[in-house]
Image 1: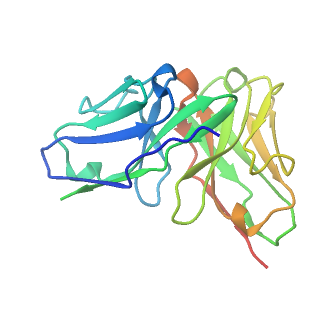
Image 2 (image 1 turned 180 degrees about the vertical axis):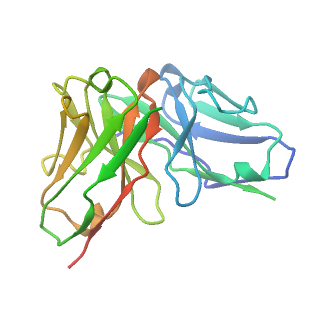
Length: 106
Length: 118
């Protein structure tokens, strides 16, 4: 099974930058996707194909992927960005989700 | 506008069966793979199953292989999940999602709760 490891939590002050990592074996060779999930709501795709943003997602959200780590970066963090974030990879005919990271805005 | 609406969840006893579905609109349904993802109470996302646009190819997580069956009816724009031999570990909210670029899930339903309890 392909394991994707994320930090359980990240805390950030408003206006600062949050970086959420997703570690996996040679993850840089696979497309990585990121989801935001707020309490009681369905997940929302915020980054696909490592660094592309769906329409309607602010430019403050960006992504990168290389080696064994993919990273979701949220610039100029706002209170509304407080949520759980999950990475996802399709590998060997299976989907794999990361363990999830709670972003807390201080 | 893409819309996905799950129906048919509920309470089921351990060892029992449950079937629910997801209706889709706003896109050419047969042109896209679909997937089911679940979330146990207070836990993270867990992929359950996926099906190709034609329905010819199906994929399952090890945790449900042999017990769950995914299917679709492209004439009705619906995808189904048949759950058999359920256990308490199958409790959670089940989401259907449309597959997009690179295997992403670009649209999600609102989720449907499934509770396995005696």
